[in-house]
Amino acid sequence: MKTLDLQQPKDIIQALMKDATPERSDEIDALWVKYHPKVVVADDGPSITLDATKERIKFSPKTMELFWLIGFSGWRAIECYSPHVVLSEPCRITLTDLFDDDSDLPEVERAYKERLTAARRLIVERDVAAAPWPDDLPRPSTERNAIADPQYQAAYDLTVLATAFAFFHEFRHVMLDFDDERPKDRKEEELQADVWAREFMTAKLDDYAKVHCHDYLEVLRKRSMGFALAALILHEVTPQHGGNCDYFSIKTSLTTLLHNTPLSDDDHFWCFAASLLVGIFRQRHLAFSPPPMAARALAEHLLNELPD
Image 1 (spheres, rainbow, N blue to C red):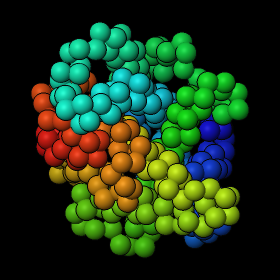
Image 2 (cartoon, rainbow, N blue to C red):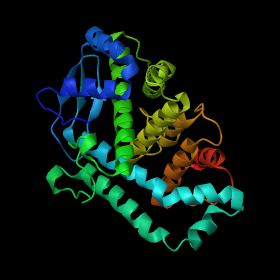
Image 3 (tube, rainbow, N blue to C red):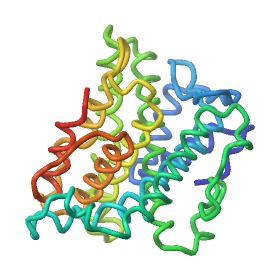
Image 4 (tube, helix red, strand yellow):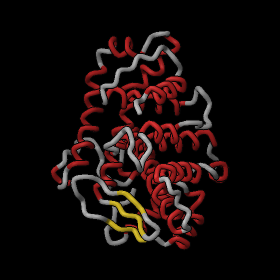
């Protein structure tokens, strides 16, 4: 993720979208030519800014920092909860019992909670410089090759995908408004933007995999993990989890991004998704006691159990 140039933010957003979906680079250029929205950098305030009309996409610098911070924090969910997710079904032990028996979990989970607490502090701070930043976490201006830790390199890649997804979502709002196709129901428009962004980022994965001699399922897994991370970010920045007259509940939004992911039941993606969802339940102190089940079944169970 390149340093945000406040004088040329449009170039940075275009580059971000292309980095996430290089197989559609020419189409992205064509979309920007056809719809030509301005990119407006808003002043930071005691919240975040990310929205779009037919004329412009607007965001605040703090929004980018927040996506970065939550993205890297979300990667920690694997460290916290994936061992329990993996062991529950074959060992026929509930997550609750595994958590209770894991003497190391409180310390590992504390680091995860500290990062999410820092993200929540960043949301409400008007002065971004006053918000805490984890000492071990790279800043958003850091180039990928400058990050030595392979775990953080993986977190970097997924954070770029999650952030790109958010801007593809906003670009869809631009398109619908420009083409006079915005649904009367604001909720329907939000859902359409999510679906379009997800489909745009996956429709030509086979072409990309063949050109670069990658395994298609590995590329699909990585993109899908980016969407799951985007769902976590969406959860953290949404003050009204139950939705309102303009937005679906966070449960509906999460389900849209994760449901019908075309990966096998035993794919590693489901462990990641389930770990993120376990983190949501534990951070919100929501009671849950699923029976032992495989990762995909657990992820789907937790989505169903998430309060509206």
